[in-house]
Structure formats: C-alpha cells, structure tokens
Image 1: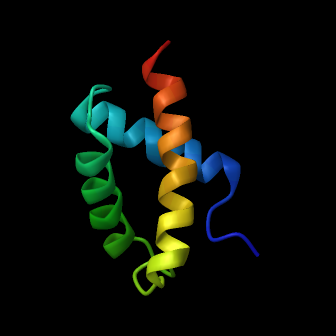
Image 2 (image 1 turned 30 degrees about the vertical axis):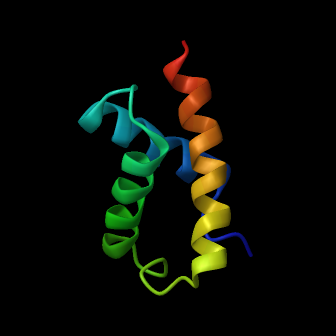
Image 3 (image 1 turned 90 degrees about the vertical axis):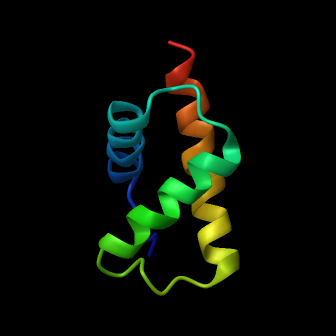
Length: 68
C-alpha cells in the first residue's frame, strides 16, 4: 500500500504552497515535507529510502504546480 494516495500527495503539496509559496528550493521543500511527516500518522517512522521516494514524488507535483 502506498503511504499517500495521489489525492493526499496533491493536497499536501497545495498545503505547502499555501504556507510557503511556490519558489522553494528542493532542500527547503524537503525540510518542510519531513516536518509534515512528523504530524501525519503512519509517516513519522518512514525509513530514509521510503521518505526520499515520497519526497521525490511530492517534489515533482510541487514543480508542476508552481509553474501554473
């Protein structure tokens, strides 16, 4: 099972854009996502490879949304 559905991923990216804008560096974006993971049940204990995979997916969504 995926830790986040597509819809949840999009909603998380929208939240980050609403809170921090659409011009974040990947490093800052990653920090914010990791902070969010601490507050989402089931995501607080992800292994680094799992977290990296999800962050890369979220980053792709973020870059797509920030260009619109």
